Amino acid sequence: MKAQGWYRDPYLVHEDRYFSDGQPTKLVRDGDAEAYDPPPPGQPKLELVGVPESPDSFNSNELRRADDLSAGPARYDRTNAFWAALDSVVIYGPIP
Image (cartoon, rainbow, N blue to C red):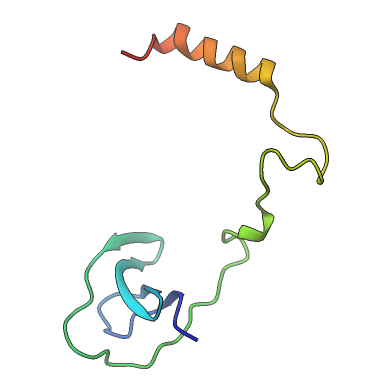
């Protein structure tokens, strides 16, 4: 299985580095700050160590389509959407 997700930065430049399809990417993070920094040339200095997910991290299993009525009534209300759009035009003006 190829590395996918956040791992401790094996190049020892940042705290964590994102891997996609087994390859290091330029997406890095230090604490809560995310940035871009391409991986240095050469082999990593350490083996990959996964970063445990925090309890409040994004969970794609909680997503559902807007037109999926199996989980109850749709939350989208056409009337409310219309009035919200009209309010934004009144406040901010029409799109040029």
